[in-house]
Image 1 (cartoon, rainbow, N blue to C red):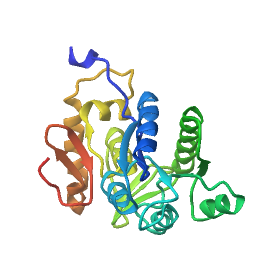
Image 2: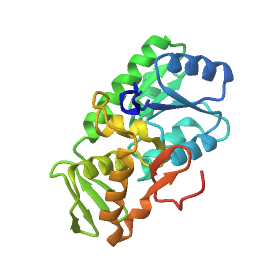
Image 3: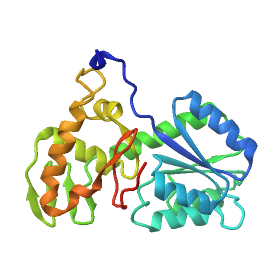
Length: 242
């Protein structure tokens, strides 16, 4: 039965922004072995585009980048509301205390100097991800006029309360916490129901329809987009054929 197939949890995605191919390759191999999904960029502009489009769970950011420095990109990310919550770990050969303080002051969550142990890198990434999850767990999430409050477990649209079932609430909470990323039905089942609960994959379609119906009177059903051949995503951008 499909419901009894072993399903994998959605992996954390890590963006590596470094202009040295050898460094990117070494880090990518280590992260993939540690069961992370890896994205790569060799300059700040490309890195920013990937962050906006793909919303990685964490960014490994080299300080010394061509044209725009990593420290400037970090400053920009923390200044923009849509990217301010993305965790950043600076990777740099600058080991002086003043450099570390500067990196942390612009909003970096950690600072690792080159050369570094890949085992330590993976450990530090996991630590930052845990801290980030704990920090954001109780924060209300607002996208345009749609707001979800995890403390009271209430959803409102333009300040009007929306009535929805507990499963639809959990789906929306996951989607709003992970915007602009496509998830398969299997991944959504794991994240919302849990890896040890066996239900049919098509169950997700039923709850997606219910969630869209709850959001439809306010026009926010457009945020729940179908991704052909994959599953679903939460996005404020106009849906494109995928």
